[in-house]
Length: 423
Image 1: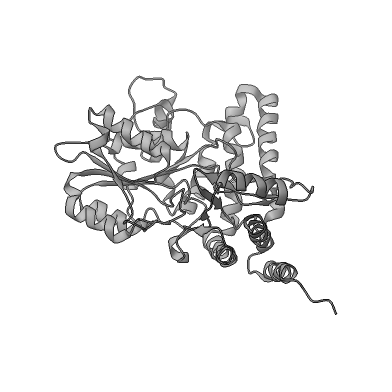
Image 2: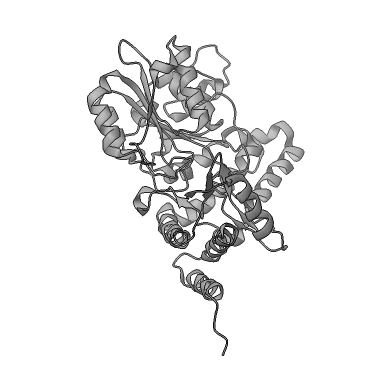
């Protein structure tokens, strides 16, 4: 009688979980890169760049064909007229982040959108000058807030307050953030935190922190680069002032994809707000009258600067259609199952430390592990085992089992490869 090895039994269990999961994988709708053996890689870098939806090439091809066939007339006569192309993304994006359609717009890139939001909502005055961010914020956010403070003639070292975990801990505690806002909120002009921290994978308590920030008189915005398409969001109901996200990570919109922006309707319909303006933010009724006076649209569209980049928006549209069909609640449930399985497998491996919260309610689908020589380990995972992850210097490897295309078999494969390489 052949006795199954632990690796064989683990693989069989992973196959069983894949075959019986309530949400079958949609992996066939994506293009998965090949591993060193010529088969599909186990791709865990969707928190850095999502896989290409197979439908993306078709949609881009249709836009190229319409451009060739119609040229300038494509603005009005393409199968999806270009002049209002961004409107095709509005409702699925709004459903994705829990917003009203007029609160959402697809435009620009993430950091550009953060700057546009801060041009409106960061208005330091008197003692209320501070910007609150997490110490482990993504570097681009740090650069953006520091430059905004300097733009207003402030010293970034004083104006930007960087929130740090308690000594010996990896994560910010909600009660510490709320407590700071209760004590010193009268000096805070803007709270700008990452919804899911890019390094640790911690999911912040967005509604609780938003409530505390607004109660303190501050504007509260969120960078949702690692949250959009990863966890369910209710931006309108949570009373968030603004938010911005990229579309190339969990949203699979392609490298440098067009980003998204949320502006709560109490601001979106306020024509008196100061803003940096461009012609696509002007009311469509007068946009082509070519007048010098700016008349903002009564929606998040008012922050648009330029006409939509069609070839960059088509892949985002392809991906949003998948999210719309499946729904974030179903994806979140599968994400918990996949991530919980992978976390359990990683727990038994020596030589690594999982720094992502163990509580499923406090994380998305990313698991960050601290190891020696993270960059070297990531290279070996890809070259020797066909497991694609990413490294963040000096010692963190990030693995994100994205529920649209990752499987339990992928998670088993990743755990076995990590155990073998760290043994």
